[in-house]
Image (cartoon, rainbow, N blue to C red; front, side, top):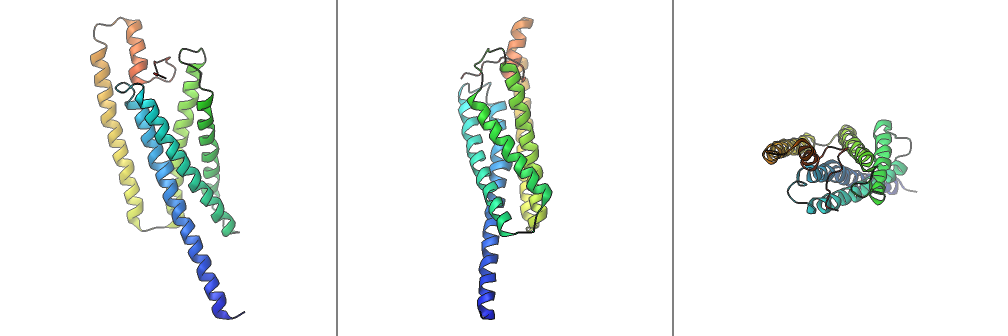
Length: 212
């Protein structure tokens, strides 16, 4: 075996690793780190104005995010097999936990109680808690990924900018939501106000009208 042949093989293997690292980073950032937060925003803030369309938008965006995230997670498994002996424990464990929790969240839709069911409030809390956990783990692991890959600073700052934009959008929608709620409760009695509060503000334990 000539030295030149060994060098070429090493170059090809290096290109293979770079290819999968780039796909791993892009798929996970877009799927877990951008689309999933957008799906949450759609569920929380479109509901009072676009019932029941908000639900289908939420499911569509979350499904695409989950598919991209799982694809990114799969490329991580390939990278793990490719780089034997190189293990980033935190990034790996969070990735496994994220995949497991996200899959539970998807499966939970299949057993979602009908509106008004006695355990619907408990299911809402379960769905909400898992959703928040997924968002936190997703963003945390993306930044761990930045530390591992060490890309040009513009990529980290670009993602921080996207998170800032999502946070700003959330603040605007939250203000609109509370203004809408304050305007709608005028003249209502307490039971009516409580029902409207659940429908507009989306309290997890409320048996709100989901439209589906």
